[in-house]
Image (cartoon, rainbow over all chains, first blue to last red):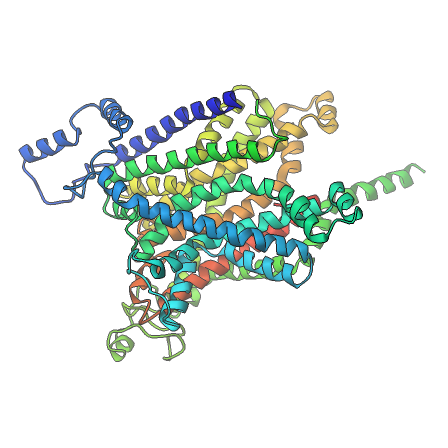
Length: 307
Length: 314
């Protein structure tokens, strides 16, 4: 277990190395500097700017300096927000992004798993069809389309919840972004749970438990659900990762000041420093979350022994 | 006697060779959702190809008279003649814009999958057949690619090449094809590799080798045709992912450039009018959702049809 953990964590290093090289390379493959197209500046000013952002040294030295800063926890400058660094934006935005992501995650698990269980228990009856229909729609609806439909329904027509551009100020502004972000994942978890439950229903130990005369509820909870949830746990990693990296669309749509919103603004304003930092940060999150989930998986399912 | 045996043999082999596909097709058309999805896919394809001939207006052509009559405000669907779905905030015909959006989405759907097949199948085939170093590199590479969130990579490519000639080709559509294609071939390559790894140990391959068939011919004539079912499913299910990626890029403003009217871009432009003119966002939204849904239904149906063992599983 410990060697497995060490190997998984060690594997993060080449992954992050390749991700950072690709990101850095692409951002520097762009023709013209980050300021071309802006007002003309004198050669001296250009020299000072290049010096400040280390654009005057060879590219491999730029990369080494950038990675060195990263290792010291410095994500580097942004090219557009002159008075702030990427670190400032992350410190400011991360608590909001994390809160949004975690609430969506809890909602997805709390709704998705029961939905899947209900569908499987009522297999080929109306609960199944209803749950399957909900998850089909959820899977096919992108988060920003779901967000539109939610805003139009609850904010424009019913006028019960605040719409777009209201920021992140208290529970009433949280509801729609969290639901819009969680929608796809609710559907995904429900689908997995249903398939896994149907698989377990046919197992010998379930039949044994039923023939022993154990109450149906106990069979469902203790024998079926507990075993059926093991494969569901494997997709929780990608789901958490998706909720963290995918939330920028929702943050941008609703005008929520998390790190994702700055990422989108960085994309639109061609702020290469900000894009680079955010991409590496997101990739690190995803890789790290996957390690955590793999380890968790080993704890939940004692049959799995990593070597 | 000999002719009877030959006839029987012909009947048996012909039934066997067409049977798999005929059975699969039979299962597919019994799947109601897949049929509904398939019909909508065909309709969208039709619109994608013939849209410019159907469109009553050009997607970039303002109707100044109608727009002035509406005091320069967006016009709701079904309220004025000549504009079925009304006018947007620039006085452009929403119906014609939706048609152009269908063309963009459908071209992304199919061109991206062509890129995926062109890159994924050869690499997967080489890795699965020869194994060794190519295989190791492919697996290491895909491990890294899996850690890199797809959408971020697509955005990164789009931002990096946006201002080059390459990025401006076809109003940015070419870059969208390449960026999404480059991030999506890995799944198909892994799939082909896995199929070939198991198929190359089978007896019919051994038999082919014994009679002296070359490696290249074994792969192209015997292995790839046998591996094609899962690849078809993966490609069909890859289509909604590609459509969504394109819509997201356009929504964020780094995909297809004006004046082309991507559904994602229509949404981004309409959000500012979500109170006064919600139809500017929900019409393209419904188009995206139904397009994704229909390809998902069709892909699920194909999977169940081609591999009945997997029915009900992921």
